[in-house]
Length: 499
Image (tube, rainbow, N blue to C red; front, side):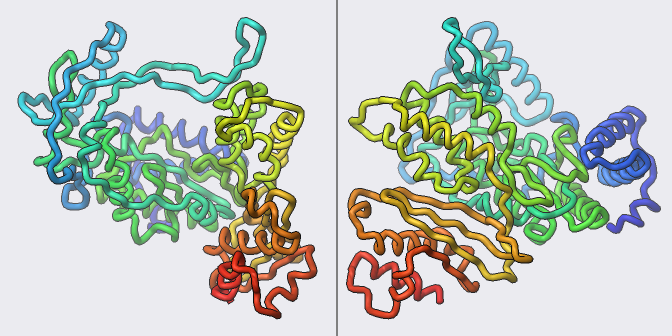
């Protein structure tokens, strides 16, 4: 619906309490744009009215969830042939955890998500797990800094491991994170929406509901809606969301599970796209969580990355936590640090080369000795995270440029594009060599770097013009003669298949 029609046709039909809450939230969230007070007021009112028009798509409590129609999506639990049912006993809970289970059971019963059941061939036990906050750094008794996660409470879960082991797996794919981020980047306005208890909006087929039965001190219950813990629940949910927004995905919205990112080339187009998404939610009974939605903002955090008109950046909050981490003292600490830093390796040039002293500590039968070289590597990685550049999404109308290089034990490559005589970095990639590759001659190592780059960036460069930069002049003549080394016959084919 066009913005002008929203202004003319929307009536103020909210109850007073809802109007106050919606207006306050809208104004507080719209301050993120940095508009003047007059523009902020008109923007807030416009966003308020747009949300009010599709108020059935907004939820505040579990009771607001109507459930997606079974004709559109329904969860099935198909068992493997010759699988045997499992009936497990309930587990002991202390009074504090029993209170957590009791509150959750009453909440789900009131919302109609579960119901009591007396007989079932599948019964799984309830298990309470701690709710953990983000990583924080605290001092121990010896005044040493140690990383930890604060426990903010407990949540009730169902241990469906035996049911999952007997279930036939659904392999519906999730979107590639990097490609989704590239489609989102470089837009001036965004709306970030969040599904309200997304899994609970998907119905379970009546024939499969009894398989979800769980036991607790208050009886046995089964789910009418899809619970967390089922192995195929993420695949079912992603399939459902893809079906609902199939004609809008990659045009105005990106969907990753219950996170929906709406974008537009201008304020009016973003608002118009938001209205189309809200209308689709209303038509399919998909309910969004107002408290977690952000409307008409300039930037936002999506899957651990900051998206804005500038491009794709690191989530600085995560980096700040990593900077406070103490020096690793165990293999587990090394693995944890490399895992967090490796999540952002796209932003770090020569990541594998820098991290090599640390990765060697992960090898079997290697004594843990965090020496000066390891400390230097650890420091360089943290510095690289702080100074990480803003990477750009590819412009498919321009040729790609690849810069390759090789060292004694690693190869690296940079994918970029020159736009207005400025090189925009798209992706940093690197890889350590194995023992055999470390023995290659210099020319072979440089060629190996190019082969690695073509394989790594294949999804970008297929069908596009590519310019390769290398500091090894001998490679210019590598295709002028037949390559004799069997090791690079596949590399030659790799190049020729892309020409």
